[in-house]
Length: 228
Image 1 (cartoon, rainbow, N blue to C red):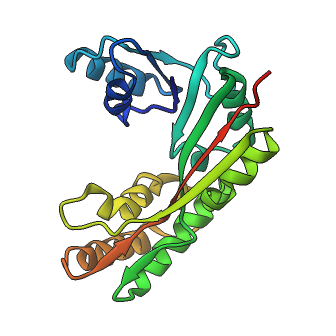
Image 2: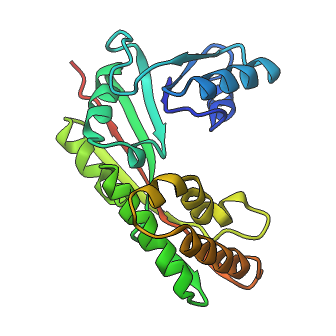
């Protein structure tokens, strides 16, 4: 199994348990710091069936047909031309193997009671992603990308998760916008002051346990590479 864009932790430990002692998981990430962190995690947890390598998800350099399953999680939403990554995933799996991804669609989000600052933050978020050439609505398109890449038996499920106070994803929207702050300001989308005001209002709203928040709809899609 290969996990593209594995990040510093992601679900490497879960995948390791799923394949068992006779299986093998290869994690790939472009960011050197993420690779180092993932390797340390594998070492600390004794994940002897895990290997982490540094590489480009579009051009891994690994042999074609090397894996039973190619997996990615919240990777396609962050890159321009995600079809290139899907093509590489298809190339990497054996005939009859599977490709599976989990991707968000931020066009479907919820914050209730309504808050104008949340709407403003969501607008800033989507605009910034679009300017990067990425698609914040990728979730709804994944099954289509799979079919275009030649996969068969394509399936898709959508999941709507509401995040409680003890879930780190409750503040994923303000956290992501905060991480993008330098380029938001540099591009002149809004000022630092506006970002501060919006960030404060959203976080205060989310600190109320009665506020419902769903940052995005999650799409799980899978497909099989035709047997030779």
